[in-house]
Image (cartoon, rainbow, N blue to C red):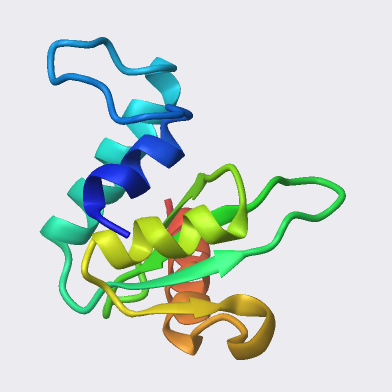
Amino acid sequence: MSLRSALDRLLGRSAPSSPAAAPAGGGRAAAVGHLEEFARTRVGVEAYVEPPNAQTPTTVLLVATTGEWTRRRVPDERTGFEVARSLGVPVYNVRFTGYPQRMRDWNSAQRQARKRR
């Protein structure tokens, strides 16, 4: 699937729109922009598609080599994989791989830094 069709799917568009058309849902456009920016400005980014659960919908989690991470909602798992592939990063299903240790280490370091303040 092309980058355009993956992004159209994430943005909730049923068919590709003209460049002059306003994106459907400003929040979705912001989510796409955020994921693109994160992947572009970090080294070694990998994507993890998280299935929906009782508290949250399906999400795409991007994790950099440093362990820094970001998460954004997507309509479904298929879209999550398509978006990650369109970003040009490796993509995994978190149900099968779990979360990377570097992400847990980064979270722990952030908590420790907050305690010291």
